[in-house]
Length: 135
Length: 135
Length: 135
Length: 135
Image 1 (tube, helix red, strand yellow):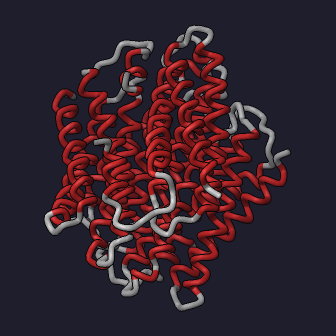
Image 2: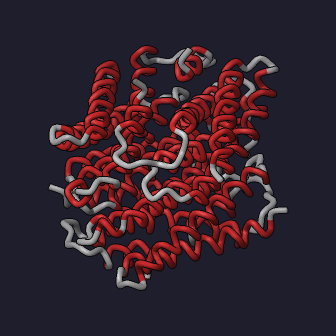
Image 3: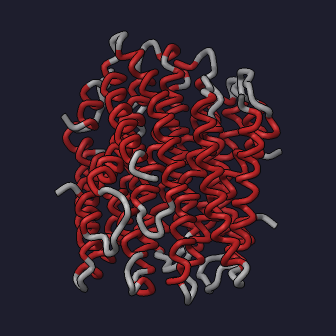
C-alpha cells in the first residue's frame, strides 16, 4: 500500500477531509516538489541556461511551496481550515505559474520541462479538488 | 551590516520592490520560522503538553510556510508578482492563526509562547506591509 | 513512469551515479520525510502523547534531513561527492535513530509508528546502498 | 533581545548544550541558509551565469542543509547527540564546499559571492565550535 495512505489509515482520530482527495494532494505536492528540484537542476545543465533563468527560479519557488503545503496537509490534528486553504491557494498559484513556464520550454524541445509541467498540472488539480471540499 | 541587506545591496540587477520592506519581511520570516520551531519544541517539554497540541501543530505549519515565503521573497530574478502575493497571503494567514494560539497560551503563563506570538505578529505585519506595495 | 525516473531519463548531461540506486534513494527520502511528518501528527493525536515526545521530536528531525538529502541528491549538475556523502551520512543516522524509536512504539501497538519505522528502514537502506557506490 | 536567545531562555527544561554556542550556531545556520538562497538568485542574474552553475548548485544544497540543521539544533527536547552530530557534520561539509566556491568567485569580483562566502565561513565555524562540545 502507498505509504501516505497507510499513514492516513492508521491515524488514531477521525478527520474532516476526504481521504482519497487528501492522499492524492499530499502525494502530488511531494511529486511536484521533487520534479521541480530536478527540473531546476536539468535547466542548469542546458547549453542555453541563460534562457531558462525564469524556469529555474519558478521551479525553486514551486518546490518550496509544494513541500510546505504537503506538510501542512499531512497534519490533521487540530486541523485549521483557514491555514489549509491559504496553503492550497499559494500552491495552486505557483503550480500554475511554474507549469505555464515549463510548458513553454517543453514546446521548444526541453523534455524535462515537459515532465515537470505535467507534475505541476497534476498538483494544481489535486489542490483545487481538495480546496473545493474545504468550506 | 545585516547579511540579508548586504546581499540585496550586491544584487546585480535592479528590482521592483522597496528594499527596506523586502529586507524586513525576509528577516521576519526567518525569525518567525525559527521561533515557531523552538516554540513547538518548548511545548513538547511542558507538563501539560496535551493542552498544547494545537499550538505545536500550528507552530510546525507556521515554520514551514515562513521558510518557504522567506525563500520566495529572497529571489528577485524574474520576479513574479502573483507568486510573491500568494506566498505572502499564506504566510499572513498562518502567522495570524499561530500568533492567536500562542498569545492564548502566553496569557496563561507560557513565556515561550509569548516570545513566539510576538515573532508571529512581527512577521504578519512585515508581510502585510510588503504585500501592500505589490500591485 | 515514475516521475523521479522520467526526470532522470530526460536529464541533459551524463551523470556519475547508478540510476536505479539514485532514483530509489530520492524516492525513499521523500517517502520517509512524509511518513515522519504524518507520524509526528498521529502521535500528537494519541491519548498517551506524553510518552511519545521523543518520537515526535525525532520524526521532525528525520523529515527535515530527508527533505534536504532528497534535494541534494536530485541535483546532479556539478555534483560534489563530499556534499552528497555528508548528506547521506546524516540521513542514515537520523533514519536509524528515528526508525528505532518508531519500532519501539510499534511493538507496543502504535500502528502508524510501525508504518513509519518501515519507511525509515527503507530510506536508511537506500541511502547506504547509494553511499556504497560513492567513492 | 535576540529571538533565538529569548526562546532558549524561556525553554521549560534544562538542556545539555552551551547556550552561547547553541544560539550562535542556530543563528549562523539561518543566516547562511538565507545568504545562499539570495546568492543563487544573484548568480542567476549575472551575465556570465554559465560560469556560476556550480555556485548556484552548491548554494541550493547549502541552504537546504543549513535550514535542516538549524531546525534539528532548535529542538532540545529528548535531544539525541548522534543526530545533532550527524547534522552538524553535514552542515560543516556543505558550508566548506560552498564557501570555497563562493570565495573563488568573490576573488573575481562577484560581491554577493563574497558576502555569502563570509556567511558560509561563520556557519562552518559555529557548527565546528558546537560540535566540539558534543561528546
